Amino acid sequence: MMGPAPDLSWNRRMPFKLLIADDHPMFRGALLHALADLLRDGCALEAASHSAMETVLACGDHGVDLVLLDLTMPGALGFSSLLWLRGEHPDIPVLVVSSNDHPRNVRRAQQFGAAGFVSKSAPADVLRDAVTRIMQGETAFVPHGPNVATTMLCLRRALPGSRRSSSAC
Image 1 (cartoon, rainbow, N blue to C red):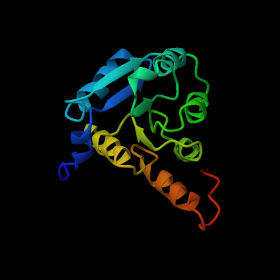
Image 2: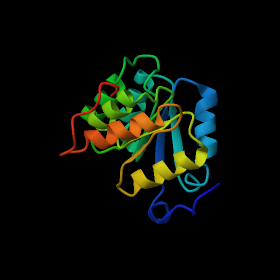
Image 3: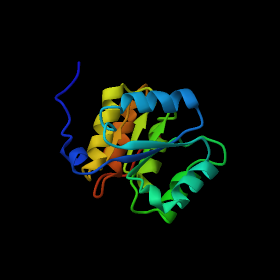
Image 4: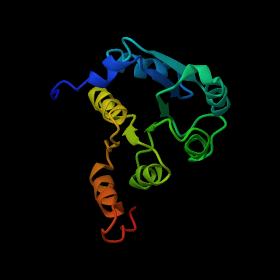
């Protein structure tokens, strides 16, 4: 069941530029299809490797507003691409889109500065909502799949003032 329509007022203010960094062409196409409504007045750039992502971002005239980042692609090791993005382009929010939705990875993505995390097994409306929330200046850590309950527990425990996280995290 679909929720209420997302607030797209941020999208009406200016063209939206997205960089999809994922090594699977079919998945990049699926992401583009899922985000077609949000990108109606904007554009999407694609990178199939860490070095391709670096090249796209080195061309400053692209003005990327958001990076959708797969953690496992050529030239990346673990969270290296996320850490590089946070160091070199701290003003560009990063939404991690990964099939590895283990609670530890979701928490680490959050700790390393990602604006959000969406599992590759999540429905398209969850992705659209996460992108909308991030572009409105919020965060969007949306666990999905077999690790949802553990992920939610770990994220709650990772908040300031909460108890130490469990060993599952």
